[in-house]
Image (cartoon, rainbow, N blue to C red; front, side, top):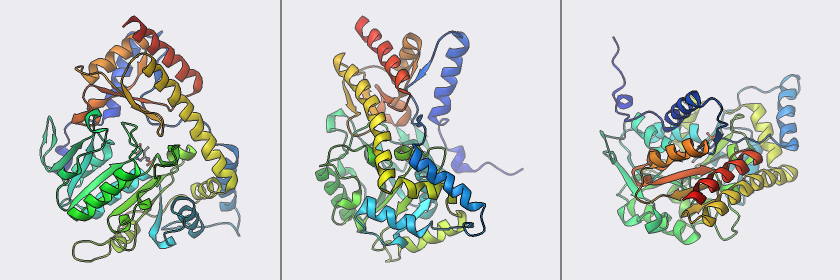
Length: 403
Ligand SMILES: *Cc1c(COP(=O)(O)O)cnc(C)c1O
C-alpha cells in the first residue's frame, strides 16, 4: 500500500473550524430548541450588491454568445489586472505583475509550492491557519509540539506588544506571512510599523507574504491599505488580496497576487518568473464569470457598493466592540477590520468558548486554536445578518451583566 504523506501526517490537530462545528453540533443535539447564533466564522452573509451582481450575470451571458465567449484566461483578464493596479496600487504595477486567482487562500497554497519545503517560515502568532498548516503540507515544518511546529518561527502578537511582533526575532532568510488588518486579532499595522516590517525583511533577506484580504475595511486614512505603500517593499514583498471579504465573493472565488518584478531570490533569479511557471502549471486561471464581477466591482458604481457592503459589516463590528467595551471586556479590532479579539486573562479559550455557547448559544472562535499566543482570547466575527448580530450582542451583554 502507498504510505501516507509524512508531511500531512505531521499535522497536529484537525483544522480549527471542523472542531468548532463538531462542538456546535453536539450542543445543538443536546439542546434542540436553542437558536444558535454564529459569530464564529469568517464567512460573508450579505447578498452581492446589484451592480456587481450584474457584472457576474453579464459574464455568464457572454459565455453563451459567439462574440463574448472566452476560454482559459491564465493570468486573468488584462483589463481586470490594469484596474486592480490602478485602484489598489496607484498604477504602480504592470499588468504582468498582477495575477488573478480564485482566491487569496488558494494563492497562499500555491506560494507554498513556489517556496517549497526548504523555506524557513515565520508567522505572526496567532495567525490565519493556512500559513502554518500549508507550510506543514509543503514540508517546511518539523514535529508539532504544544507551542507549535519545530522549524516555524512564531512571533507573538499580544496586548503586551500592541499586536505587532518583535521584529528583532525575525530569523535570516525567512518567508514571513504577515496579515493586516489581521485575522484573527483585528489589529491593523500603522505606517511606521509597516516601514519597520519592510526594513526588517530587507535586513534579514526575507520575503514578506502580505495578506491584505481585509484592506477594504480600513477606515483610518493614515493606515496603508497595502504593503507597497512602503518604500522598498517591491524588493521584499508579495501581496495577496481578494474580492471575498470586500465584495462578498467568498462563494464566487476571485482574488489576486501582486508579485513585483524587482523581487529576487538569493541567487538573483526572478520570483515573478517562477510564480508564472507555478501558476501556469497547477492553476488554469480564475472563472471568467467571476472576473466580469470583479470588473464591475472596480468601476465607480462597484466601488460604492464595496464601500456600502464593508460599511454594513463595520457597523456590526461597532455593535460588538461597543458592547464589550461597555462591559469591561478588553478587546482590540473592529475599527479597521471585521474581527474583534477579546481577552479573558487567565482563562482557557475553549472554556470561554464553551461557556458562551452554553449560556448564550453563541458560537465564537477560540484564540488558542489559531496559535499558541491566542490562549485566553476569543475572536468574534462581524460577518452576520444585522438581527443576528444584535441578538448575539444582547445575549453576551446579559451574560456579562450577571458577571
Ligand atoms: C478570508 C481570508 C482570505 C480570503 O481567502 P479567499 O480564498 O480569497 O476567499 C485570505 N486571508 C485571510 C486572512 C482571510 O481571512
